[in-house]
Structure formats: C-alpha cells, structure tokens
Length: 258
Image (cartoon, rainbow, N blue to C red):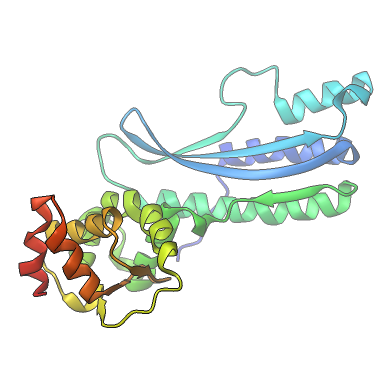
C-alpha cells in the first residue's frame, strides 16, 4: 500500500474541531465520527461528518458560545461547513481506488488524533466512530485488495473486479447489507447438504447475480461468510426455485445442476 498524505481540505475540517476541543473541551459531552457513501449528480462521493455535542450550551459564557459556533458549528460559513467531501468516482470515469484509500488513511488518522485530544483536553467526553469495514464500499474493496496484487488495482478497477468475481461491483455493493441481514435469519439452521458459492464456478455474471438476488428474495437458508462467500442449503435451494412464481429464476436449476 502506498503512503498517503493528509488532504488539505480534510485537515482544515479536522483541525477546526481540534482547536475547539482544545479551547472548550471540558464543555463537550461527546464527539462522533460518521461517513456516508453517496451518489451525487452521477458521482460517487464520500462525506465525513464530525458531530460535537455540548453539555449545556445555554450555560456557556458568551465567549464560549462564540468559540463553539466558530469551531464546532462554523456558523459564519454556509457552504461546506458541516462535512468534508471527497469524490472517488467522477461522472465521466470509473472508481479511483487511490481516492478511497486516501479517505481511509485520513479517517484513520483523524480517529487517533481525536482520541488523543479528548484524553488530554476534555472531561468525561465520549467518543464514537463508524468503522470503515462496517460499510459495504470499504468491506468489498478491502477483500478485493486482499485477493489481488498491489499493482493490479491501479486502473480499470470495475472491469478487473468483474473478471475476478464474475459479478459487477455496484451490484455487490447494493446487495451486501441485504445478504448480511437475510443471512442472520438462518444463524441456527442445520445445513444438511452444503452448496458453496465459490465452488460452483459460474462463469456468467448474469447467473451469479441472479443467484444472489434469489437468496435475498426467497426463503432459502444460507450463510454469508466473513470473506463474502456464501454457503447454501442445497435441497432448500432446489425446492425454493421449483416453487417460485418468478420464471426468471428457473434458469438457475440448469446452471447450478440441481
């Protein structure tokens, strides 16, 4: 992994909050980090938010209230004051993994810095943050980087991703949480005959994605594993395909040789 530097705009956004914590940290009840993966005007965008909660804003002195507004709420600036934004997928091109890795580096750096600031400049302040790997974008890309050589991810990420997994990246990102949630319904299920998705060796992107869609929509017991592989109860899968009223899924019987 390459070395990354702290983005200038990210640093300014983070540093503003650090200065506020140093000045009136004892008045702060909690600090939380969050981020969103958004589509904005056809672009893939990551937004980073810092939320600061004051114990009792009205009890602060006039000077402290001015400080809180200046450093935490930035009331003097109407544009871009509430978050830092990074575009990782311009509308005219594909996903830029360097930009995503840059965000990951900055976010991890910010967590360590804020932890230190809270320890030294606040009193009983609670700090929380969203884990990068709890988000499908970072989880899926992290697995991709583990499965490939560093020089492999530089360009044409989406094309190489599809070739490696026989699925489209945006499809996997869209279905990730749905599979994760549905899988929890079968935590205690006793599998009789296991079918492993990675051993099916399906070459068709359409069939691979159709199988995952069917698992989401049907009552087929499956487990979504930590490495994003899926184990399926074979007899249940065959039964569910046979009884489905959606004829588009019937093609799975032939391709999966059930």
